[in-house]
Image (cartoon, rainbow, N blue to C red; front, side, top):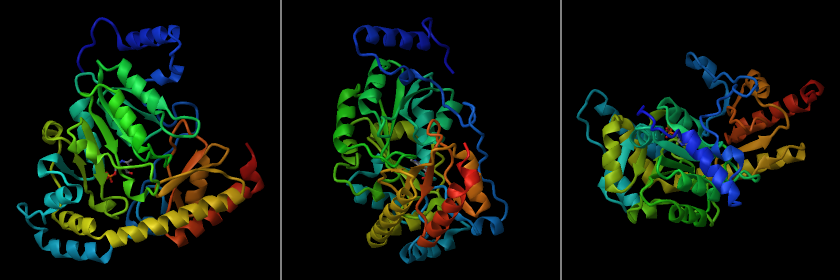
Length: 398
Ligand code: PLP
């Protein structure tokens, strides 16, 4: 990490906050909080990530922990991947036309695309590229915390801007944090829609944000859950890439396209940003998923079915939980958060004992449980377990 200059950042930010306070513009005190708030660091019970051995354990669970598509890849994608199996023994395999297909899909040029082994790699690459030399990251809190872990590992300072009371991202607050730290901010992260809350940033808010921050600050817009959104106030941010704004859009094949285990994602960005990021990417994408990715982009019919089925099940589950007295955050994704009104870590464990895997904690939302939408059968198992765990007398004890 580069050496800090004479005036410490903490002091600098504090000074700005004080000055803003005097101007009546003081952000909430926690706007300036630094460093990831890790599970277990604030006294809540510690969450141990699920670990599995061989498949006999894993297969029996209802898997509602990782926002996957529970139906698996459609036949068109399976066929394409089976065809590509013949390249398993090669390094110099053809790429199935994946880059060209993505370019066509979004109306961009191949030079605007960076392929990766999942969009998680894109997030890592963006951090490595833009957060070196003691640069800062600005993002919402909570958001996709694995991204923040990578930034923390790079020893980057993170300004985490708390969500608004309705769990939406505080766009003016993030804009403000970016502007007052513009000298130091290397990257801004907008997760749209946000994981873990499922709430989106409207297209007007994205515009307001991009117009309101210095135009040379790269803004990473993570659209992992883009395909589940039905709200007309939302739009993809790909047009900003076409305009040449310093925007990186991250997309994944892990969610609606059901290819999480195959690892494929990509970034769309102006050529200059792609050129800066490329040296940090492995470029190591297997032959099979390249063919699968092309078929997935073409199979819009299967994706429309997954979207419709997922939204129907999500809304039904949210309604059933409300009938039991548990309110959820409205969601535009294939998951939602339900307020359990008690710490979730022991409850996650209870669910596991009943064969249902649910989402990890996202502090500071320590009483909100993230639940992915599985198959109808998995959601029945979830509701049965929920009734058992949450409505027994012992469960109600504080
Ligand atoms: N971004 C968000 C918001 C996510 O929720 C996830 C995974 O859950 C990822 C990125 C990474 O996905 P993948 O690496 O599988 O593409």
